[in-house]
Length: 141
Image 1 (cartoon, helix red, strand yellow):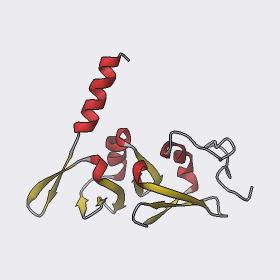
Image 2 (image 1 turned 90 degrees about the vertical axis):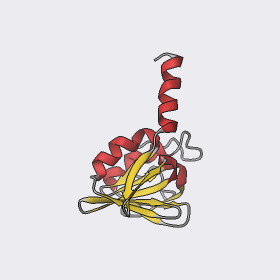
Image 3 (image 1 turned 45 degrees about the vertical axis):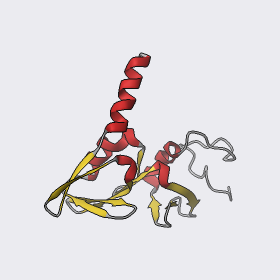
């Protein structure tokens, strides 16, 4: 991909907004404002720092739209924005607890733990973290 094409792609991502119909109005939200997205039946709940919005959309569709903006699937019903993740703690069950800015916690299931490597560009002090290693983040291994 040429430099020009990369710049054009970056510009489209930065100007992308999501239109959300809320209370009879259409609200435009930049993906960087969204902390997490949770599936709620046939809907998804977009969590922002100050508000939330319920949309009639599938979590899979939201994942496809928002993956280029740093969203990572950590559970069959949860997407988080990598920029808001503050901490990951391993559980003895092979699952992890992920804490985002503001203190909210989500469970990272074993099926989605391979996505954890997308949360950071570099992993320091993890002894060669590999998403294929079952206990890679477990300090007791």
